[in-house]
Length: 230
Ligand SMILES: *Cc1c(COP(=O)(O)O)cnc(C)c1O
Image (tube, rainbow, N blue to C red; front, side, top):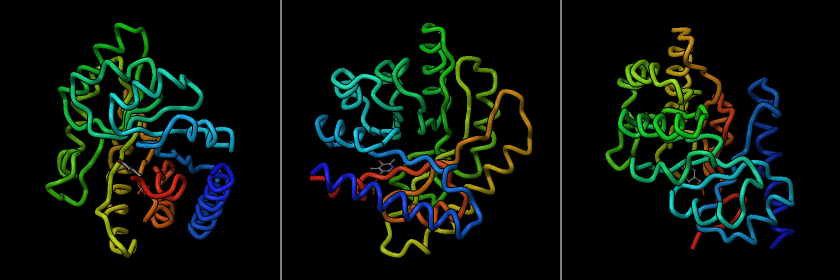
């Protein structure tokens, strides 16, 4: 198991490097978030021992339980749909919340972060494809949402995230990644002092090389590191 994971990490890193070079980018600018949902804590420990620095979970209670056992052994990312009443499991524990998609959840993150005396970095999740099954704010509403989050002093909007449609051919999702990157540039162009457009989180096991070619600097990879989920 340990050998498999180490080999998988090496393979993902090599593919990130190739994609970055194709795009004229520095591979070191791409952070690999290992998505450990459904993966047991012993395996997660092995993966961190093998060199992973960033872990992602998509369910708040699962994150809470794992954090209780593992603590801050890596940078933790929350990447799943987030309900307001689950925010309490995350604040003070996660480095980056990728999935803010509305004012209510943002206001709760702000409130609990203020109480904890910290500023929480968040990304706005954008449903670029418009698929009904996907969470995230529509591409046409993302700018307005970021604008409306500016007064919240205890969150820092730090970029954008998207989940592309599942596909066997990653070329079909390239236009969605392009669209998110263009939106990222548009928002950065507003030069709002409260907002930092720093992280562009896009790309999963099936499509991360294309995402890196299109400018992703955070990719979220589960299956390609840990193997298929049960
Ligand atoms: C599960 C998940 C991933 C990783 O998916 P893989 O295809 O296993 O790499 C990435 N992002 C989100 C939001 C996820 O829920």
